[in-house]
Amino acid sequence: IVTGSGGTATSSAASLTVNDVAPVFSTPSADSTTTLDAGQTLTLSADATGSTPITYQWKKGVSNLSNGSLANGATVSGASTGVLTLTGVLAGDAGIYTCNAHNVAGDTLSHSTTLNVNDPSDAFNGLPV
Image 1 (tube, helix red, strand yellow):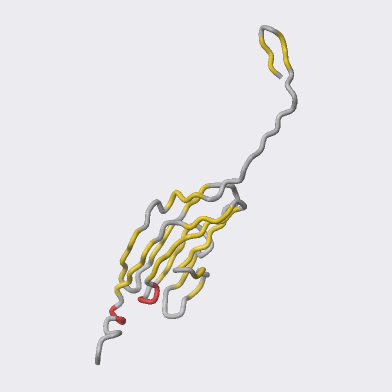
Image 2: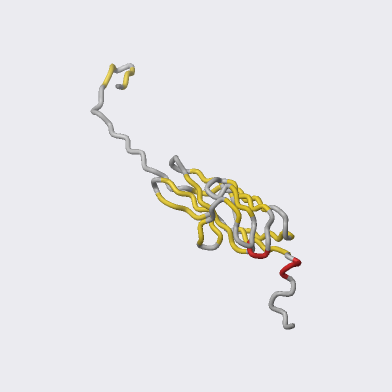
């Protein structure tokens, strides 16, 4: 209904379509590299916008992470949240970490963080004896 000095007019019904929007990451905003000493803690954050709800899944390489202790590695928490924590990193934790955000419109992979670990217990691996 529109009302003005010339009177009132009524239009026919209108239709509004709302399209779902795939996740878009605001954090992290670029690929990065970090180096930690063995035993330290790594915390990574990811935040995506788009149609809700949005779910998160952290990955090391192409493998999904899950909460708990990794064989020969850190203790993982937050594997399916926006904040991943690796407590007590070891050489085996070195690699490329990304976060996948998912909603009804699709999946989006975050920028990556490459983790390097200085692990003195790994110093002689690969050296001739």
